Image 1 (cartoon, rainbow, N blue to C red):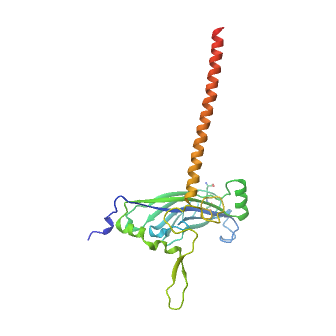
Image 2 (image 1 turned 90 degrees about the vertical axis):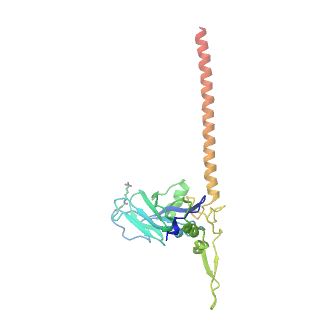
Image 3 (image 1 turned 90 degrees about the horizontal axis):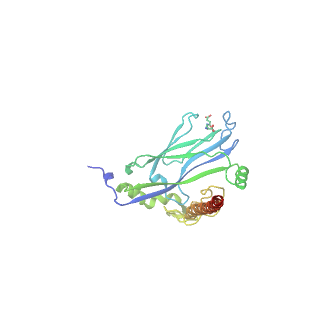
Length: 260
Ligand code: SLL
């Protein structure tokens, strides 16, 4: 019998948002070996994570390969589902981690490639840097998206199943012989879409710190881009005026010279 996975859901794209990032601490730090290996000054963790209110990423993500800098022994680290998809290490320098995402076999999709440049040093405004130093915590995260175009019918079923939100549910009201009720306790309704507003308790620099991934953040980025486009236009306009003035003066000068 032909495998059902070859059938595809036409004219359909399923998008999944997730987070790729790292956190870093100056050593010594409780999560890392003490004393650290010779010359290692930072402890860090690189990760691939679901959004705080998003669907379980293991419905589509089955394996993640993190390729570290060649100075590491066993530079290629592979983490299978259910994860967590993360690598904890110590070191001295920043580098680009090559990340390969492997999808559920019923998806029939090839692995995709992402890169995350490790950020180990405090960044942002002076105030933000001071906070990161004080907390001994640097977080650098970005929002990522994968698109499954015309997914196989089996894969589509997994991607649309209610089960993918089970990881957000907590067991409540367990009485004798009673089945637990599963309820959501997060601040934002579980959704595969980006939240409309940032979650409360936002801290740190990255849009992701404190779980601020949201449409508001997306809008802010877009507004920022629009603003810089507008100020660029303004600068060009200003430059044009200056040029025009210069041209006029030259003309006047030219006229004056020519008149002599
Ligand atoms: C830099 N271009 O010089 C980078 C290289 C090297 C990262 C970063 C230690 C590895 C080990 C380590 O941090 N390697 O000793 O296992 O900034």
